[in-house]
Amino acid sequence: MKRTIIASLFLIIACKEERKEIKTTVEPSQTKEKAVQNNESNEAEDAKKWLEKSIVDYFKGDIGNGEKNLQKITTKDYFDYKTDATNVDLDVDRSLTEKEFQDKWKSKFNTNKAGIGVGFLISAQDWINIEVGNCELKSSSKDEYVFNVVLRDDGFKAQYPSVIKVVKENGSFLIADVLQDEPK
Image (cartoon, rainbow, N blue to C red):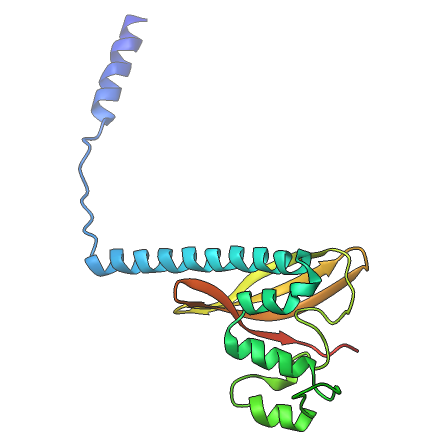
């Protein structure tokens, strides 16, 4: 028994390797790049959280303040664009024909996905409880984030897919564009 223990100790000592410190040099550019990527992913996550909360708050808000609430969460250009799209061919002041609408906005927006004649984010006039079913980052660049979003209203068993662009202006997130399909 003693011989086995002594032999085991010799074996352990003989097999033991010295620990060597391995220094890895990190280039400053690598550190900066990681910090920028990390910051961008944090910004994208912040934009996503803001978008989800803003959508839910918009649909839970007082319908009488819908226009004012929409102005708070969208850029001025998008608000004007969506207002024009909603009012195309309606008998209201400053409404445009579809051709006038296309001509006015085609340089800034994809007018084929404007949601002409329908409301903001959903094609229904009525809703029970709009929730964000899915919100995934599609792409991002400096201060601009594009999300694939599916809104759902379980009360009406409806889903509303769209692509939403969020921008950061003056330290705040705002919806800058929504690509909506025309209702069938």
